[in-house]
Length: 494
Image 1 (cartoon, rainbow, N blue to C red):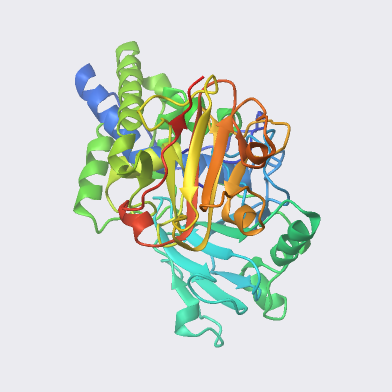
Image 2: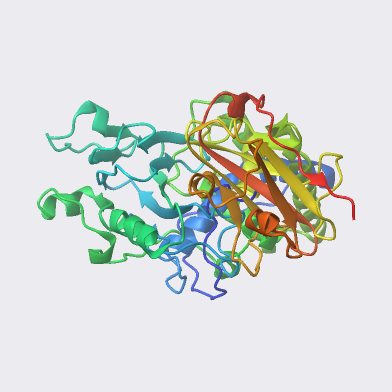
């Protein structure tokens, strides 16, 4: 899942922008290492830095690339205002049951005030992530209730005076000056009244720099009334071509150049209290990836460049192959474990940075992938499948569940009934056929079912390979430890 969610790799316009040079950096020196040593360290750099590189590139698309449809500037929300449909390619494995808001904030100069409206009728969650993929703050109906709320997010280096009205529980001390805010509102249907309901709540939500908040009478300024101030983080021209399918778009030198920018970004507060982190950074410095050093592939020899390319390929392959290590087997579904709280587990962090960047911590919601049927054979639209639930044993959540279907790349599929998911909202509205024994069977196939009952429960599949990425909002323990008997996907006789 290259974004449970969330997650959220944004912008796909291929527009060249001017280079903002890296200042005050010494030139990269000649490497005094063998090709095999460079390759090994380059592979380690890929695993260590993939999450941060995707963060940096995604932040660029959101805060600096003005031609991007998701451009919002720094310290300001960008809102998804309509449901995600197949033509939307800015997010991999998107969700059909929430609308998103996201913002990248720079807390190095001043705090940011977040204001959330009272919401008593739909799902809402607000979360903050640092550049390492760790979430350190949650708010919303699951966590802090449904009343109107406000918080002040304070960067680690800020020394000013906070406004008197903020109580201790409203003060969030961020571990890094770089922050990614994401908010999700439940979208119970694609009906206009449900869309308008979410839009109203989006318009009442704000993230406002403290100085602007004070100037505005100690109130937040809505996105629609905010100037979209661009950030000025260092960049290079090819970054504009990397905003679509970031992991797959990266060339080796793109990656190492981006990682060099990450390591030299003073807003991305380092974890200098971790022995493993310090040891890792010391090793990467041996190949010119270090604070105070500009990575310049033009200064590398042909054999050194080849070693970096081979290390990149090895890191890329290792991360892909390591995907099963971060999952629990839940009756054939790959249930994610430990997402959003990686610490120094660099491999788990890299796998999610690849497959589901921005995915939340499990206390918010959990996800499960499915690529194969109950016999272990890869899913393919050449065949027909069923997925059968006992309605007395639906996925146990406090909020809701959703089971969207994607092509193998992780995008929604055009179909004649515009159905991209089955979910608990649809079940509660009585949209599915349930037999007299309480059995709910979904028919997963690319051709239209012939009977009315099966048509009601049809989940259209593509003609080729496909996959699922289920979400469970407010998961109960069986959806955390993998003990829930999630129905397998059963191939039908042709």
